[in-house]
Length: 368
Ligand SMILES: [Zn+2]
Ligand SMILES: [Zn+2]
Ligand SMILES: [Zn+2]
Ligand SMILES: [Zn+2]
Image 1: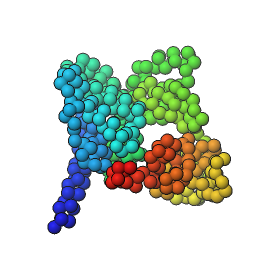
Image 2: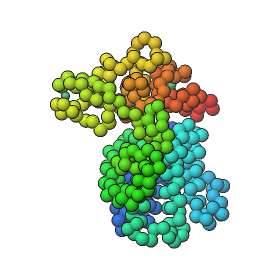
Image 3: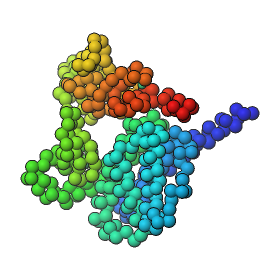
Image 4: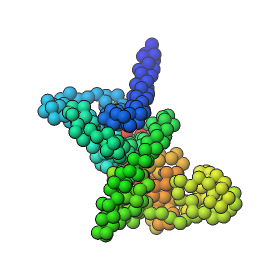
């Protein structure tokens, strides 16, 4: 008898999670549908979707995490139109303190900017969005930026949670990317500013998100340059490229393989198989860095959560051949002893990508 109750409850949780995610996807679709004629609705729906994805992520951890805390809503903030950001702030705190999985600051900023506009639209006559033509460009740019971060979370850090929905997520991603015309218009609009920055000595590179030559370099690192894109607003890193090669599995010619967009051999056009790349890298790039002793050193990737070790020390940087991120440190986790990449503090004081689920479960059970 007891069993029946438990299994029903479990199914309810799954159904609720499923409904939240489907709802979030629906809001993204309607947001894109409305972009041309009703940009205000578009931004409202887009923001709803961001909230729903956050709710789904929290709910996946524990259903109580999505209960709102009424004591946090106060009349003043309601009247100035920012009471909805209470959800966002709260969700951000819970992600950090309870899930130990902080949302990157840049992503939080992009969601907040969108949330503020959403609130102004809902609660006030929002003056910024009266002129439809200019509006579409600014709405696209803002959503493009927020989507960049949301998509990144969905396909990397949160991928174990949203794996069943990956096809839908990629379908939306393609729709979002089709807004390129408006990104080009925005580029033309700010082109004089970009030229001025160049003249004053600023380094401008091609943004790896909107593909416009509008990425202003903010900081140079060993693993690549941090930039802020003047067109799409994304802050990201242009990873240092590598000319490292492996031989093609069909024609045996060497080719530069570390490129996430490369799907076929540049010599014979044969499809590049991931399994083969792993095998070829094991032969050529498994010596590790100066800290590694003799043997094979391939790390698990904390970025893409690949179940096979996929991070090799290639050309001076730890480089994942599954998600093509590079530049992270790799160490043996002091908790579970697996060889992993990740943020050193997180691994030291919490857990690594391989043992975090166990550590979390033990915290939930025992309080430590
Ligand atoms: Zn850009
Ligand atoms: Zn080939
Ligand atoms: Zn990876
Ligand atoms: Zn570990």
